[in-house]
Image (cartoon, rainbow, N blue to C red; front, side, top):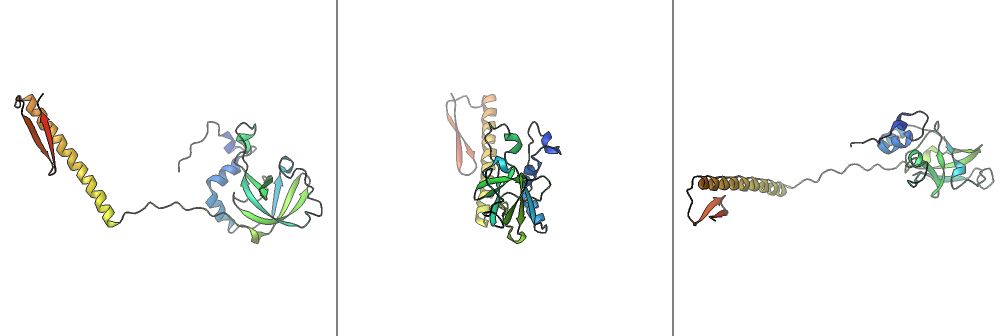
Length: 210
């Protein structure tokens, strides 16, 4: 796969700007999933709660205390007109029932887009700590590239036959045109007679003197 970078891609090598994680997860999803098979963790820190659907939710209430919920890693989608489009669009975001909770903290373990897991939520100032059940982590299936369809023996024979036939037709046609040109140059065909030239075993070219 060939990747063409945008005109301004300095953010991809920056240690301060967001976006590097999104690039890595989207381009190397399969590699991330393979590494996670052996990597175990039990906590995820979530930021940006006040900017999303649960901004007014009290996670310290009895409703959420020790309650296990299923979370999914989705994609943060913004319109191009949004001032933070190039910074946040396409980045992974944690969701509960399709509603946006927040993004992974930079120093927190992360999961690829499409992953699901169960966790309890613990408030930590303006952020949330997810107490993850490691056994509940379900990674997305990475589709393997489809192999090119193989022709059967008869199909291969027909394809080869067609190519040989085209080459034969082309060579014979070139020969017939060359012969006609040579005759005209030598004034060997000054009459108004119709002349014919064989092209292969099935076709005949006709030249009419005008």
